[in-house]
Amino acid sequence: MTKSILITMGDAAGIGPEIIAKAFRDSPADMAGCIVVGDVATLRRAAALTAATGTPAWPVAQLDSLTEAPGVPPRCIPVLQKCELLAPAPFGLVSALAGKAAAECIVWAARAVLAGEAAAMVTAPIHKEALAAAGGWAAGFPGHTEMLQAEAAAFLGRPVRQVPVRMMLANDELKTVLVSIHLSLRNAIEAVTFENVLQTLRITHAAVGASLGRAPRIAVAGLNPHAGEGGLFGTEEQSIIAPALAAARAEGLDVHGPLAPDTVFMRARNAPGKVGEFDVVVAMYHDQGLIPVKYLGVEQGVNVTLGLPLVRTSPDHGTAFDIAGTAQADASSLVAAVRMARQLAA
Image 1: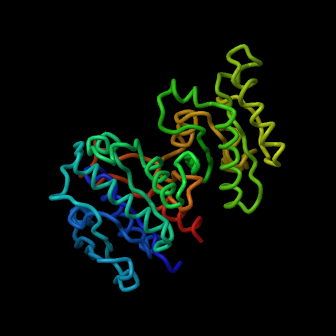
Image 2: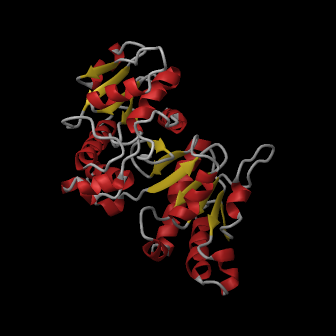
Image 3: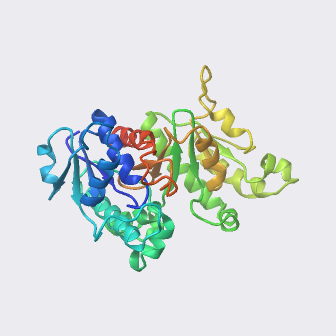
């Protein structure tokens, strides 16, 4: 790959900088060609924190532009200074400055990828409370997905509503795509509409199909227990989800359901010695879809934003303020996100 993969620093008070430093140190082949978009001082602190006993910390090389990427020496962490932090943020504390810095890095990286200056972006975890505390434009977004959607819409010259996106969480055993993302449960239930379900199926078919090289087998979870049990426990399956599936089948999509949400994920799972019945599960709301994937282990889980005109992946975990600064954080999910980004951008 001739273009770099950009890794945004995430919240400087969390584990993002630590897992980035560990990934460069422990998985240099996977991290080759990656450039960190963040704060140089914060990455130097992380490199020192995660240095193996008796060995010096990996040096941090400050770059002035992406054109310097080919000249980055081996065994160092290349960083583009693209945010403002007067000093490294205190570990584990919500900070408006850290939230603003994280947002600045995300926007810069997204614009670079959209402009074709980089191949893909991998985002280290941000803290939504810190993002809100930052105020201004950054506070207008509940998370990465919505921020990247806005940047993509601006790049394409379209209203945000015309750039629909979805979250997919994936590991080697299970992939799940969400109809709604960061909404209260009450609002998430209201978001289960014919249009939203059908749109999710179309986005899933296109994105997962592109990675598989064939039409994916899509399972669709019901909203209610037992997928409504024929209307006994709710009618959304009959009145909304089933008609959306019928419309998707009419377009040639290989969709199945609505299926009982308490068993569909087991049926789709690629367990040892057993190939799953489905390639991906479409879930009706955030926790319904993410709990099964995260239960299988966050170490290899990857968050992928579908529907964007750019490749964006991220680790399957948050900022972990409770262990930030202790060097305990596991970088496996970040490395998996880099691998997937490279695969999707190829």
